[in-house]
Amino acid sequence: MQKRGRTSLFEDLLTMATRLPWWIDLMIAVFAYIGFHLWHVHFLHEMNQMNEPLPIPVATNPAAAIPNAVNTGMASGGT
Image (cartoon, rainbow, N blue to C red; front, side, top):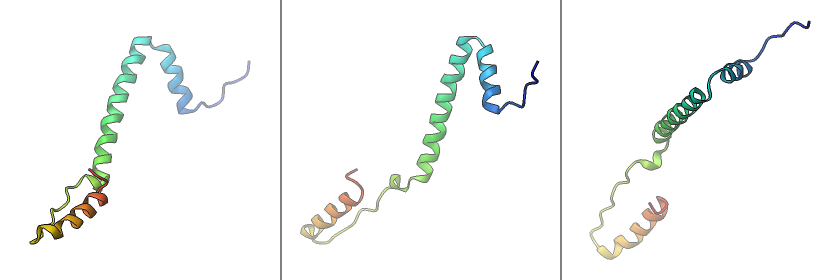
């Protein structure tokens, strides 16, 4: 008989997952999806500076405020 070599972490996890009932695998998948989604949203919000509110420019002449408002809107991507 051939001696089994060292296995990787992925192979060990896959072997362990095949020995569990299907409903436990499903619960692990759902919790992992929710956990990774929340983790991703948390770090995406911290890293993305586009979510910060922009200062509102103040102009004394209302007609002069129109180009400034258009440029600010185009710079923020229309949001």
